[in-house]
Length: 422
Image 1 (cartoon, rainbow, N blue to C red):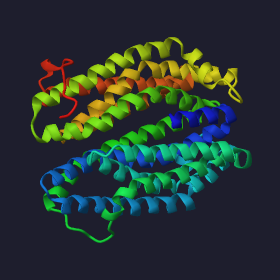
Image 2 (image 1 turned 180 degrees about the horizontal axis):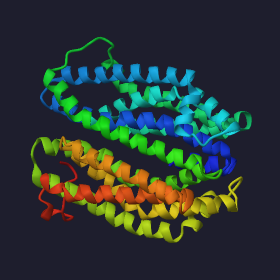
Image 3 (image 1 turned 90 degrees about the horizontal axis):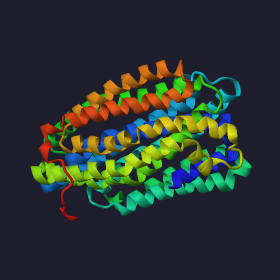
Image 4 (image 1 turned 45 degrees about the vertical axis):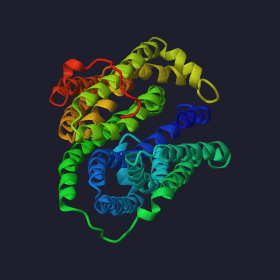
């Protein structure tokens, strides 16, 4: 909700001004590093970490935690130095359509903001570790601090710093987020080389290498969308960002939150080979998500303009901005069910130690998305980026559903009663 509030404030102050286009591209690069870290850590690390804890080998479990911590710090610090000294090359890569003042602003913003990825990437590890320990309140509080401080800085410093206020907020929020999570984990952190059973290291690599490939393709996908959008009219990137945030809000509140909670249970049931409980838990998750998001999808599609007017039309966000944002919102709305189901299906496969299947279909649909972006942007303009993503996500979800029979009794996928505690 606070991230949603941030978009409202940005829309009020800037509308679909070129400064928001620049800010969105820079933040996409930073969050891309964070997402890259999270998408590798979450399935690979958590599965092995829970196994080690379950086998009473806490030494190896926390050895893995520290090994990941050191790796994340080293890699993100090197990336930050690279971006600081070569910001122009980075902007040329992610937004080649930016020119003149737009490009200069992007260079300055990315130099200032990129170090936030150090703290955000490390928080991906601390967050999933706490979730694996069945501690959900503290990670959620850290997320509140991150978004809340970003929003507060934007509101109170906008008059003095303009768009730079949002960047300052991101940096302060990222530091605060990690600090809160470390309040429970700082005693476990060590920069000494700790012992890790070779079996766990082997399992980590077995789960990680397909993820490296898949997440790399996913980031290429985001990069490609930015590249296409950077050549579109001013405000196109902002309109896509605003409309996607409208769709993301209900998905984050329900579907993503559900995935965070059920992931450790999926892992435990898979390890224990409780096939019947696993089937019932998945059935309930998929059933509730479909029931909730089908009507939301229809309403968002039919009333896309009215929704944009209701949410954003104030301050600098005028009628032109409403029209610019409503079109991609309609296309994103079609894919709301797909976006939601993908969240649950992917973590289900990961919980069953299968990173290859979702990654394979992720790579296939990234290629599909890029091709569709090329076709649609040349015919229907910037909104074609939204339609391309919707269609490619639909392909991925259908493919993942079709291969569930490897792990569960598909004929039993019906809403049944599941105990509140497993």
